[in-house]
Image (tube, rainbow over all chains, first blue to last red; front, side):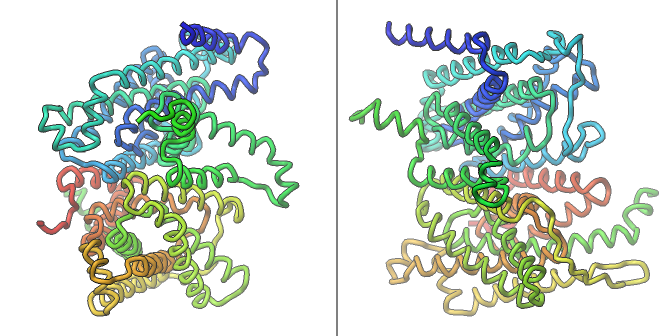
Length: 329
Length: 295
C-alpha cells in the first residue's frame, strides 16, 4: 500500500510542477530532461540485452525531420505526420535489423552497422539541404494565433508541453516495465548469452530481436518528434547523426542500462551538468583564464571511461545494488 | 550513350577516379593501423581518428606556432601520437582487455568524447590551416593533380610497404603476427604480451600520426575533424574483415572510389551515403568481410 501511495504522491507532485509558479527556465530544463529520458529509455529497452545500437540518432532524426517535413511540405498535421514518421522509423529498423539478425551480425559488428545507418541518415539530411536546411537546421512553420495550435501540436506555453512530455515519459517507463515482465525478456536474455543454445531450445531469435528493435526505434523516433514539436527547430547536430547516437549510449551507460530509472538518471546527470557549466562559463573563464567551451563533454568522456571500467551498471544501478538490495545473490 | 560520353568518358571522371585513388592511399594507411591494433590487441579503438586529429594539431603548432620546418614537425607529430597510443593502452585499454566487446567500444568511445572536447577546450573550434600549398601538376593535356595529395599517396604507400616488410621479415613482426593468431599460446611460449601490446599501440599510434601529417597537407584541422573520416576507417576495416590487413587495404580503395564517384555524379555527401550503403549491403552478403579467406 505504501508503495502505491508513494507513487500517487510522486505523480501528483510531478503534475503540479507547472502550476506552482516554477520559473520557465526550470520548466524548460525539466521538459528537455523528460524528452531525452524517453529517448534514452527507448534505447535501453534493447541496449540492456546486449543489442548496442549506434543507430538511434538516425531513428531520432527520422522522427524529428519526418514530422517537420510532412508538416511544411505536405501540409500534414503532426497528428498524422508523427505516426507516418514512426512507421518510417520502424521500416528502417526492419530494413537494417532483419538482415543483421538473420546473418548473425552481433556485438561490435552490429554496433558498426547501425553506426553506418547514423552516418547515412545524417549525410542524407545534409545532402538534401534544399529541403531540409542541411546543417543549418530546419523550422516547422508556425500555425494558429499566438502560436497555439492543437492542430499543429504547437504550444508556446511551456506548461502544456511539460504535461505532454511527462505523459510520454511515464508511458516510456511503463513500456520498460512491460518488457521487463514479459516472456520476451527471458528470450532476449537467453539470446544475449548464447544465440545457438537459445535457438536450440525453441527461441525464435530473429523474431524476438526484431520486435524489440522496432519497439526501441519507434520510441526513439517519437522522442525525436516531441523534440521537434517542442523546440520548433531541428538540426543534424541536435537530433540526428553520429553525435546523437553516441550521446544516447553514453547517457544510458552513465545512468544505468539495467534499471528502469537508469536512463532518466543519465538524462538528469548529463543535462544538468551541461547546463551548470553553460551558466557558469563566465565565472569559469575568470577562474581558468580562458573560455572553457567543451568542458561538459570533457567531463562526460572521462566519466564514460571511468563508468565502463569501475561502474558498468551505471550510477543508479550501482546505488540500488549497494544500498537497496544487499545480499541478494 | 549520351550519358556515357558526357559523364563517364570525360577527363573530369578520370580525374575523379585518380582523386579517389589518392584519398584511398591515406585511408589505407589508417585502416592498416587500426587493423594492426585490432588483430593484436583485439580491441577496436573507436577514438582512432581523434588521435589523428591530435597529430594534426601537433604538426600545426610545431610548424605554424613554433616555426619548425615541415619535416621535423611531422616527425614530432608521429612521435607524439605514438606516445599517445601507448598512453591510451596503459590508461584505458589495459583495464578493458578481455571484457565484453561492447564495453571496450564504449570505453574508447568515452576517450573519443574526451579528446574531441579537450581539443575544443584548448584549441578552440576554429579551422586551423597548416598554410602549406604544394600546388598541382599537370598529368596530361587537361588532367591536373594536387601535389600534396600525390605526396600523401606516395608516403602512405611507402608506409604500407614498410609495414608489410616489418611484419613479414623482422623478428618483432613475426611475434606480432603470432600473437594475433593465438593470444593464449604465445604467452605460454614465454612471450611478454604486455610488451608486444605496448609496441603495437606505439606503431598503431605512429601510423595515425603519419596519416595526420598527410591529411593536414590537404585539410584544415578542427576538434571534430575526426568524425569526418573516423567512421569511414572503421567501415573499411570491417568491410575488409577486422584484423585482415590485406582486406582492409583493398577495401580502403573501394571506399574512396565510391565516395569520389558518388561525389562526381551528385554531392560529396551522396558519395558518403553511397559508400555506407554499399558497406551495409556488404555486411549482409559477407558478414566476415569482403576479402575474408575461407576458414
